[in-house]
Image (cartoon, rainbow, N blue to C red; front, side, top):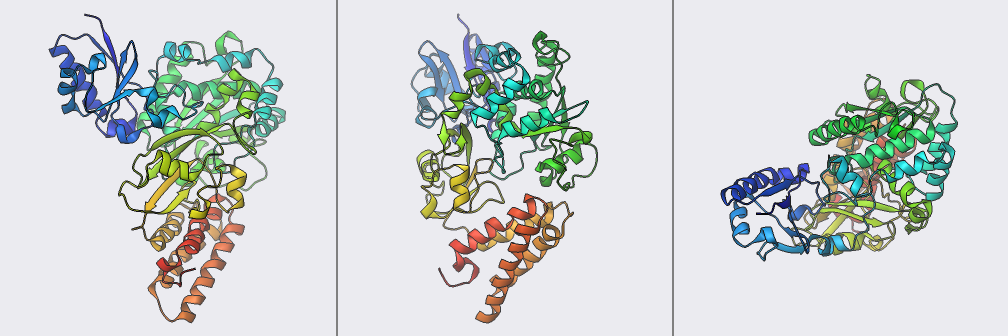
Length: 517
């Protein structure tokens, strides 16, 4: 009897929903029936409402079933699912599922397709092509490619990546470093985790290309401590890539070194800020550094350092493999390429959607997400993490790109989108933003450290009621406090905390006991 290949995700979201039990049940049931079965633990494709998503390799393509729990397995096998047979959980060919079929997967092209730790699988699906292209050029030419592509940091600041690369390459220093910021702490974001668990070699390849381009021989991955599966996967991937000569003292036999070190993060949200991260990497408390000097000039151990997050670095191999023009051809305005958007909160079909910049919030939340999970009307949508603004309904059709969102007082950030229905209380969400800042502040600057604490108190007094004059005074005090935090904080932690507060106030003053706008 021929061996059949079945895919069950090893992604931590899928595992939380029972993927390990499903995989074990498949192995047991297949053995009981005398069926030769190979169970591949792939990454997730990001369709979280269908996890665990089981895929069966057939001559007609990979057929999908989901969500499949362990006790569904006998019935699936009875229905001939191992041959792609019909079943109530059947979804047809996985690549034709509408949620997936209309995406443009560049960074996540392999996620859910390959065995994340198989070097052969990675190479067979286009892996290392970017590194080969980089090795065929000098570092300056690689930097120019990144500049020409229009690639920008896939985090809050969206700074042009090529300018950072050029600065680090030109900086004086005996040693230089590549630091990957994998301390993904924003609520509603999970693309970094999915990439590290589902396609870790893409990150390592991007880091190696960056190291060769700017003259750095050392790479550091600072991984969120709450991501044990990502840490374990990366450790194994680094070990295998080094043993295979893709990393180490002679990258791909080039005679040029690039070594990767893994470090577990300190469990602090502010360590996602690049200078606090560098402090933590050096073994100190994660406190924001004053700038200048910039990390590109004096970063890790006082040496020139290129800092990017996971998705930025994983975006680099396709740029080199396909050419800068192909990347620049995608997107909207000055926002080029694709971004993996993440749908979370009260949304029917939560998951990862990779699209070129320029699509809209309405398309994502209602087209892909299917509206709220509760079935109630959408009241508020927060974009860009816990310190992002709530985007008003009149702006749900604004193209998702950095400049267009900045023009409406919002941020795209890391692409996290959190949906709330009409039962949400915006005063409580605004208070939470201030309380979150108070807990997570590094404490170095007064506007953030004290302003967030006073912000909680002022919101409490505002909501508690009182005569209109007293409420007006508290409202003005809150606005003044937000202004001080925005313009006086040392980093984005305090500087962005007013965003959800002020946008909640503007859109839903009635939740604060104020007259409707």
